[in-house]
Image 1 (cartoon, rainbow, N blue to C red):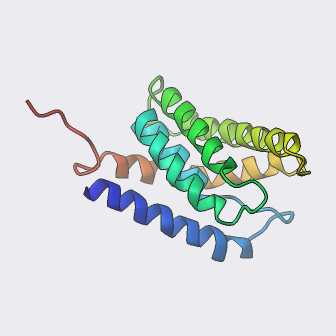
Image 2: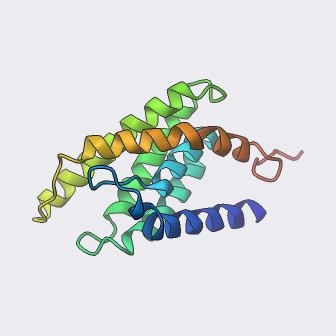
Length: 163
């Protein structure tokens, strides 16, 4: 229960920071998503099942401000977190270089999927900033991954089998 409460509180805090604080630090009129970087890092560190539920919750939070395509962020975050969890199972999670590269690639994948999904539904979106947003997310991931990894390895965050 403590684990779920901590993840919900961190997600809400990062959502608030994404919408209140981060827009004051744009580069080329773009800014990263702290919440997206957190859920990708946590999914890499914890696995696809936990990432799936965290991705759904974070997507619902992000869809609050995404009026044109409600449920799109929820669906895409779920897919991205499951992929991140699967990728996380096949790497050394203690090292941060590979997870940072995965964060960059998954941010690009989400941008592409979002672009195609919105265009299929008749909503025009600009794809030119996707690469720069991914780079910005990767830079945030450089500073965030180790902390999230250590957080996911706390005693109350790990599910242990009891016989």
